[in-house]
Length: 243
Image (cartoon, rainbow, N blue to C red; front, side):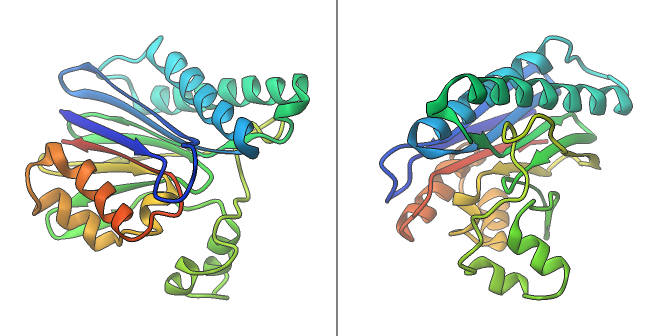
């Protein structure tokens, strides 16, 4: 198992409100987390970094190879609940942080499976020979419109409300997350990212750069450079696991 990550403020924003964490606790086990903060300049920064720290610390306290799927799902859910509670309490205590929150997408990857959790519109993809599969559903206004057949996926990419999310970590006292598992195979890649990447880079470009580009070690940097070359109006974060 190998993994890489990168984050950048983009070409327009003055600061980076994304945050990520990446760890390889053992040879065939990896943990990755991506958060995209919201709630003003200070609030977004605090929310994303607090969420990454709280979530990863909770996961690493008991993460080890070979855990049962149900146990891993409970761990992911509990870590998200603890992070949500910490953010919500901080926002209530500090008026300057009122209303802060963050997206969160996380993965525990092993040699044949990955367990994922997401809230908000940061995403996870599986990149396999000949196929790119989006694993997460955005919790957003435009995703709801797509699911109801009101707009197409192509229209969603340029919709003026595409940044409005319907769920966020820390925004309320409790949080509802999606938690699920997926099979992975040797040669697959698992990609986690903030919306700043997928709003400027297509799914097929994600697949090409991971499987057919230069060495995998440089893939995150190549994807970032594509986003920057297209104006990168938002912060950009990408993590890549090589199974």
